[in-house]
Image 1 (tube, one colour):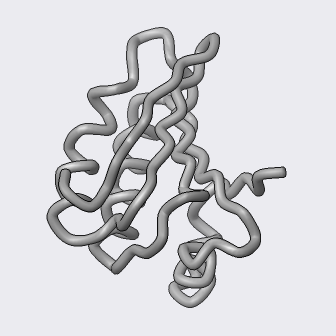
Image 2 (image 1 turned 30 degrees about the vertical axis):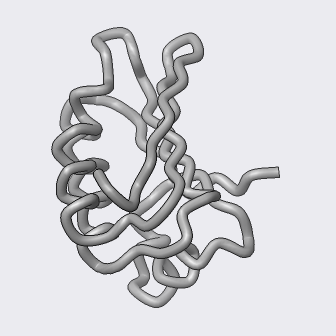
Image 3 (image 1 turned 90 degrees about the vertical axis):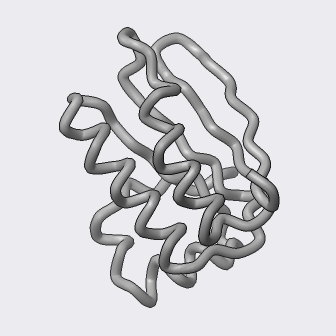
Length: 107
């Protein structure tokens, strides 16, 4: 992944993937394939922290949605962590995807 950096932290039965950079095109496709593999057997929740993501496109949004569907089939929860000033939040509202994601606002 070139323009997207990720950091993974584990806490109890949750894994949080913090992203920085741009979630677009090939980086989004790579991320979609990698994220479900990060979830271990005892993990119940995958949190995607998008607070430091500068931009995304429809490929990035699709990758997040497909990852969500994949994890829900495995019985896992999927949360997006954003702040109120995040440009991704605007795209989620424009595409009405806020109805499909559990969005957690960072403090």
